Length: 336
Ligand SMILES: NC(=O)c1ccc[n+]([C@@H]2O[C@H](COP(=O)([O-])OP(=O)(O)OC[C@H]3O[C@@H](n4cnc5c(N)ncnc54)[C@H](OP(=O)(O)O)[C@@H]3O)[C@@H](O)[C@H]2O)c1
Picture 1 (cartoon, helix red, strand yellow):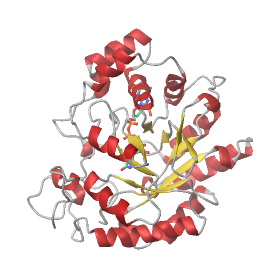
Picture 2 (spheres, protein in one colour; picture 1 turned 180 degrees about the horizontal axis):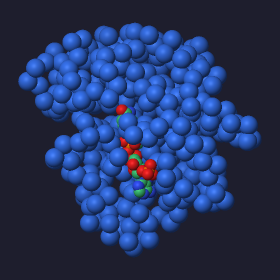
Picture 3 (tube, helix red, strand yellow; picture 1 turned 30 degrees about the vertical axis):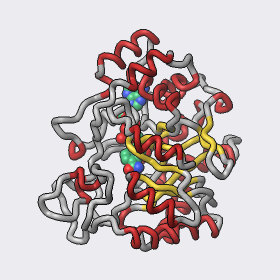
Picture 4 (tube, helix red, strand yellow; picture 1 turned 180 degrees about the vertical axis):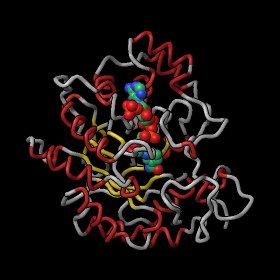
């Protein structure tokens, strides 16, 4: 547990400006318990994180803990932290693409909030699969990306802004090809794309595309998700925290390799959302601490291995497909 009295002034944490002029803290706390950390433990981490200076929390209905986190958020505001100082994200789950307003209202009620700062479409694929299912599981209603359907969902996302239920809307797990279509058709454009980003998976083209098109890149699994569920592990996966270059930079700074990953992410310009119930103070302190040198930043830029950890196999819609089909790797949306 973090030392109780240590605290970082939230005012010194870098902020990301969004196209609306709003600002979002450049580090948030992830809240997905990866099937082994309970909602109660995570809610406790949310309380602790707010006490040490976090103001940004990345939630989702599918994490199954928004009710517990809601109690924590209410308590946090009772300690004197105002709602406007907090940045709360939630996400629309895949089986609710046709039920956007009701799903958002449910998250608001569970989180005990009047509005969300950001609401994301969690995945561009509208499939139902049971929580915790194995990657070999295929749903009979699995569908490819159909832009017309996505736009139907997006129109409802836009309605959430009109209704004052959310301040910003955004995407997650998108590709350049899909984002191009959305940007062409959106009335309210996405403020953020949430995507996997860590030193072994830097996604330079997508990262640049997102930032150059007025969106901000929020990076999930910023440490390489060492606690991710077994179902999300394959033999080819690598661990950025074990990379000798990261380990050496960590040794030089006297910090954990995980903290090097977080510092690199913030300095690169993305917004990492590390999950942690035990190390959240160290991660925030790392962001507030001395910068990595430009040589160190360059060395980490050279470590990219194009190693995607969260492959999304459960969304595959045709027998014989491999997960690459989900990510439009040849630059075009994979046809049905
Ligand atoms: N949009 C999406 O589709 C999507 C997908 C995946 C994840 N996410 C979001 O991204 C968040 C982060 O991803 P993630 O949870 O998969 O992985 P992660 O943040 O890369 O890794 C979390 C793991 O790292 C450990 N850790 C954190 N800081 C550490 C430190 N300083 N030293 C040592 N170990 C440390 C944590 O352990 P302790 O708890 O013991 O500190 C935990 O086991 C999720 O919680 C979720 O909010 C979104």
